[in-house]
Image (cartoon, rainbow, N blue to C red; front, side):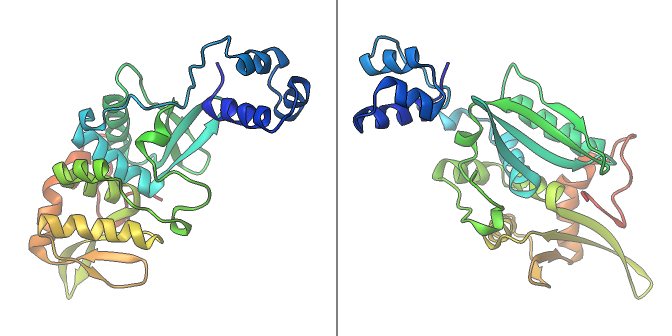
Length: 256
């Protein structure tokens, strides 16, 4: 089964006057397939067509969390006729890895995310699907901080419905929780670092929605210092990854 991109490329070459053999040589698509598409003798079921998606049916909690993870340490790549989502995480935090897998499994019912170890001390949480570019339309060539990152209205609706999950995903991917020595008193702080201005603004807007004060103490870092604010973040971030197999979330970054 060919992709809609292949089909559209062939149709454009047909409209330009190329014959079947020439199109086959240019695209690598068999001449018989080109001939069938020219005469519409075979139904086309493009793998990349997602016009049937009802985005409102996505679980807001899982989607918002995975969106935060994707905007931080996730990326999408093409693998023949499907796409692969990979979220790179620190293997020292199995609780976060499990949360990421659970979110993917909840969104892609009937499928299960796979964890691939990497030599750098990280793991890739991964799943193949033809739908990832539709679910994360922020996908594009190059680093995220070099292209606009703007949420679609349906994405914003999910974030509004599950803002805590969105913030947790961003912190789990590009954030850290530290305990600083403030004049001899232990002081909890949260930091979020990302080179994309758009992603930082999404993080700050989510904190504003939750009534959590923040400050930008460097070009790329957003910090939460106030005792009540860090306690509010602890309510839905730290407890969810503190399990017997997880290291304590103090003095260390969530991810490398």
